[in-house]
Image (cartoon, one colour):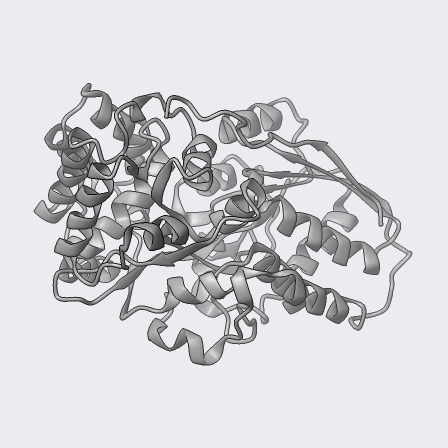
Length: 440
């Protein structure tokens, strides 16, 4: 295997001052592995890799791939390993750009020095469409066979009825992770209603813990907390997001954002939470036991295990007052191909491999994520806990991307302003008024 890692932004060492239907049947359709261990499933996927297609030595060259987060590194390496078994003469170099990703990508494209393949978040935001409009992406419509992927996921890859990326079959959702040892020590149990969840936060604070680790300076950390909180506080509103029968700035949105600010004032994120500067520090507070819980993406499980292999943690969805639970999320997007790549044949081979059931299985199982494909088994116990719920909800953020007025970007507005809610430089009312001006 020819794999070279050029640059990886490591996990923060010191903490700063501190859609699928019927998800409730996940446990009957997915195998489980004790303690969330994904090594067996990854081994099975790699064994399957050896049984696919003929090895091709006709394609050679060097590819550079950019990924946007450290928590996806192991999955990327597994896919590269699988690809190199089929294409041993292609050398792949990858870089993890954990900070200022799109700024760096835009600069590299403008300089004509873009990587051959790079992550885009598809139509979840306007970034990929902007790249298409600037003629920076290769049209994959007649290059990639998408038949192994779930149809719903393809919405992420499509701009102007053409395909520009390959989604991953992980269903990127959010969950509330909790430290099982701390729960057991204090006699706490997973809450069954929203009132019980709030009472639990108060009890954890009174016991001297940080109830929930949160980075208020990272817009994604805020979003991944806000969305499941919104679904718990108003399930009916969240159901309406799927067809835009409710608006992105309706009262339930303000209520959920104000609830986060209320909890911040109560000290539920820690007395010095404003000093938590990035999502890695947020996760480190949870994995070192300084915080009892963390609300974060399903992909963060690999980060938790890397930070603290001995951590005993579980996951649950924040419950509604009526006792029902819901899972908010969407399919994950993967890589696009730079239109002016100098290694076109190798790049096309790699992007087609990404669309194969083999590569998709490697990605999902190495990630330890929630599977969004009936053909891929999620063998992670925690992933099954996350998926054990009553409803599945559309991401609020995806509504911002899909129902904005032409030429506007509500997602960019959210990204720029949401951290200012916690610093006091913007109010919830001001933010939602600005968003309302540019929504359909």
